[in-house]
Length: 329
Image 1 (cartoon, rainbow, N blue to C red):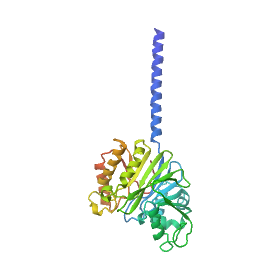
Image 2 (image 1 turned 90 degrees about the vertical axis):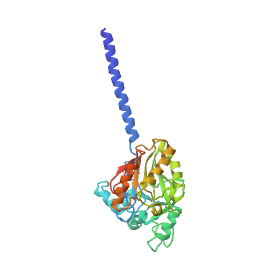
Image 3 (image 1 turned 135 degrees about the horizontal axis):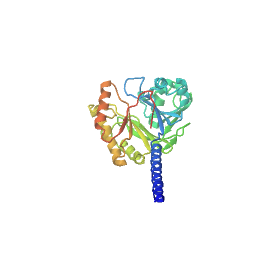
Image 4 (image 1 turned 60 degrees about the vertical axis):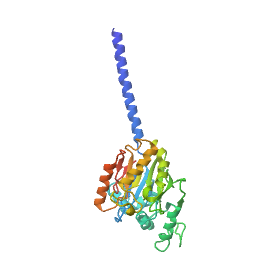
């Protein structure tokens, strides 16, 4: 009998040990699954008239200082905010010159490029990436030796060759210089036929998707968002896409004819329902959606946030970035 009880006791201890081992393994697996791939430092988060806080997001692989700047409406003021928040422990100049490895410009509207232009005399040599139409506008209207010195390596006037202007071919994946990341560009419609760009940035086997200004397909009479959702749906399904940066500029009350190539909460949710239909039901539950380009006044921003909260029937993890405050994807 003693041997029987001893056998049962040993089996009981073994069972508890096995259960603990399984729980620890599952927890470790879960933590591995949830481990962030990207760090984000917003340098500017708004659309509209606040010149100290316009669209610009630093993106880098976690635990590196190899940032690419997604648009560049505000640069210097955003870096200063990040330093105040102890995100960076070096000077503004060092972040600008050493940490930012290049710029991905979605389109050439001033609220997305003014920081790049104004800070170019103080910047270091690096690459500016944009589609052909966007690059032509920047060369002809900004870096043209008339409105501003030509800091590029091509274009009008006398190129100073500080920046390498690299044209992106739509749908082609290329490496981002001096980083471990790659990018693939997709076209967006921003007051059709004006083009904006979405950037699918890859780090290892994970991705982040950044959209410049875009109107909904229904209003723009376009299929560009549908094509983008079709391309990234497999990444959502496989949990490789860590988050989507996407604009919401106006509350639902804004009439379609005055959207000017932008989204409302209603149109955002319609578009993300299309993405879920392509990726599979429930795939967007707790998925990170970073809301960009909120346009003042403050009452409109409050209304947009309230409407998104009410209409979020997909269970999205909606993030409102704050200037100079780091978060991870």
